[in-house]
Image 1 (cartoon, rainbow, N blue to C red):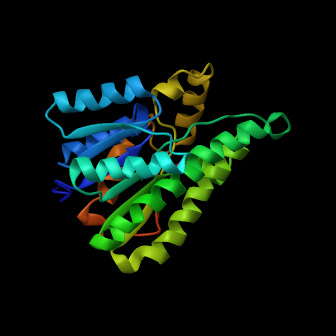
Image 2 (image 1 turned 90 degrees about the horizontal axis):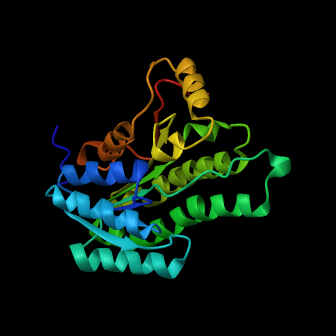
Length: 249
């Protein structure tokens, strides 16, 4: 299927590794020009360089998406380097899992700052461009955790917040040809997940609870994002696409 995103310009936050890197590569394979952005300088530069070595169009910008000025500069450099911006994937985020009674204010604030504030700042920065050109795609990477998980009050709240934001913006920006959607991954085998000390236990439990009896791969998420970023999804907005092997609650 031709997704018709050739020469569109995409920003993927948190794309030095994991789901973000897979998504950046998938969009570039469809012909998009992609900005890899992260706070992890070495990994982000390596990811962009590897994409270019494979003949893909990629540019690296180091930015902290919790800082408005750095986000503004990120979008400015994207437009300067590639001539525009059409797609934003709000992927940056990480867990700080603890039971509520042991969760510090820092644990709460860091998760909210990166996932929710970062998505707000990035979306606000690209939206004038989307409105002016009458076309834009925002895809928030939420999680099946938006239903709630123990030890993840902060993470679940942030992921649910991304869905609420997407639904509000879908109504607000649809008149301008802008769609806003979410992808909600289930258990996905990434470097971050594999590094957890309880990885094997979590993996076994997740597969047992899923109708589809395999672990998710980063490519599963990247494919879903590429579809929602495409012309093929132009009449889909305010939706949550669960990529979770059939597991919802």
